Image (tube, rainbow, N blue to C red):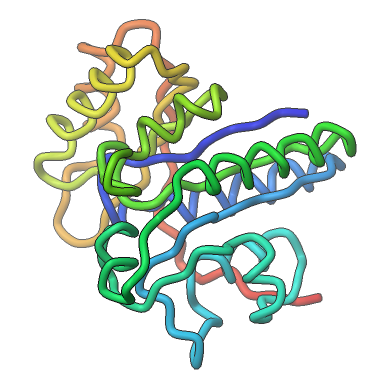
Length: 219
C-alpha cells in the first residue's frame, strides 16, 4: 500500500484537482485505489455534485451520491470556514482523535487490500483543523508522506517556501511539491518551478497545468 497525505500552501490551491489526477494515475496503472476527504467545509447537501468529495469519487469511478460522500467525508460543515470554526457555528467541535482514528482505520483497510490511499487535507498545511491542531499536526499523527500543492500566483514562491520550511522543521516527510497552475495573470509554471528549485535543493517539484474541463462521473 502507498499512503499519501495531500496538503497545500492555502485554500483553493488545487489540492482536489491534484488528488484526483493521482487517483486516475494509479487506476491507469491497474492499481486499486482509495481516497479520503475526511473533513469538508462549505458543503451544500442540496447540491453536493461539485464538492471536493464528489470530484474524488468521480476520479475513483464511483457515483458522487450523498451516501458515498459520507463514506469518505464523515465530517461535513455548511460554513466555508476552517473546520473548527465551521463546527463551532453549528454548536459542535472537531474531535481530532476521532479524525485520526478514522484515517488509520482506512489505512489498515487499504493495506489489507493492497490499495493506494490518498488523504486530502483541508485548507493550507498550517490551517487549523481543530481548536488544538493544524493540518501539519494531522500529518504528524498519521506519520505518512505528504505532498505539498502550491500555486503560481504572485506571492506563491514565498508561501511555498514558508510551508515547506514549516513541514521540514516539524519533521514531516515531504515527498515533493506539485505546482498547480493558478488562474488569471499569474507567474508561469516553469518560472515558478525554476525559482523554487534555487531554494529547495533535493525536493522533487512537478507542474500540473490547469484543467480545461471538470472531472465527471461516467460510471
